[in-house]
Length: 415
Image 1: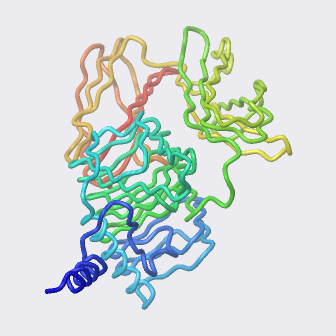
Image 2 (image 1 turned 120 degrees about the horizontal axis):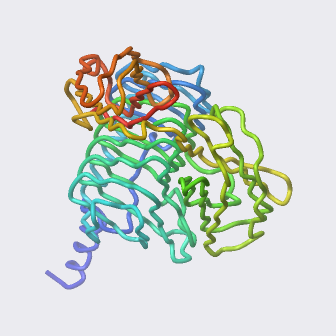
């Protein structure tokens, strides 16, 4: 065989080879127009979700619109959904075939990643901030292959800096995907399980499943941010320090940022202004802020809620996720639930400091009351079962114990 013929054969093989290497984004086909889609599973929304882009399922019911709003098409068990289902399965397979470039730990929070293909080899979590740094290249490609389920903590975020764009970030999730309350996630997710966006979570990109239900709760989802965010908020927290509430927040960059207005509420609905903190104007550097609410018990409420109103130089404004502090707890009592996470009957253990009546309440991520029990506690150890937990769908819940004016709240995860 001549050298020219051999070269031609090698060139043709490279053009038609099915092996994927770093630098190649998957072809989403018709699924590219969807911001949320499952090839097989129910699609359920609760509350005022806003979805920009098509949504749909090829095998299941789609409910909750309205109250949710869709700026796009809803495709359910029709020709468009059938083709999208095929394209999602193909794209998922393409991502699975891409070789691992850099192994990374299963805890993604706190890392800064540069363009590459990353793999975890197992289920992963994201708490805090994951930063994707494009190194000044607007075509920088990030592929993250998660070897199982992916779950984010409440308030977690994926931040893009230095030219990284949502359109060039892809996640292959080998199980279910759970986005925590008030989290902000970016990129296209191709999952092999259920997709759940908890209360107040934001997705900029796509969440597409080849097999699993989709569950939403007062979310904002869009294929692409319409305009660059004027302020990239990477963290916001509230913690008790003695008689004060200390608020901390941080930004990765700011554009025409005039100020932050700190607001508080005693019911999580009506907020009032506490203070104004100057912004950085326009800056590409990270900045950290702190502000203390002195004598926060003056709010005279069991729970105090905080949020930030970020105001631009032109008067436009956006709001941060809400953070809360519990001002009164069962000081000398212990309150536990087991197992947690759980799939079985729940056991509740209460070590009460004093005898008397108490109320146990179970609420979902939206604060809706699911169960209320009246108890009479003895001083010391109290044990009870909650067989009602067997009826709970997988997700996040809160279990609250109240005795008089004092209460304690635990987070509960059902698998």
